[in-house]
Length: 84
Image: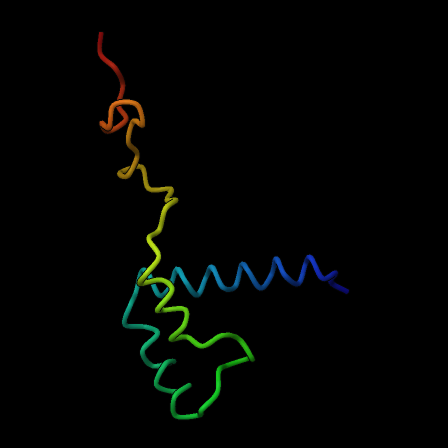
């Protein structure tokens, strides 16, 4: 049986997955938004997909693990080997 902390962690992970889908593929949530609107309720008693899409659109993604996005914080240049 899951503790309350484990349940919260699981729900936060699920939300992060839904946010990532909305960021990477903005057209995917459209079907879900239309279905929630037609049904007049959200899926699985979560917040609405349109709320998640709105959040993603107004909140920049601050942390990435993409090496292309790595910059040197001291000088503002791409991180690279320094040649002496």
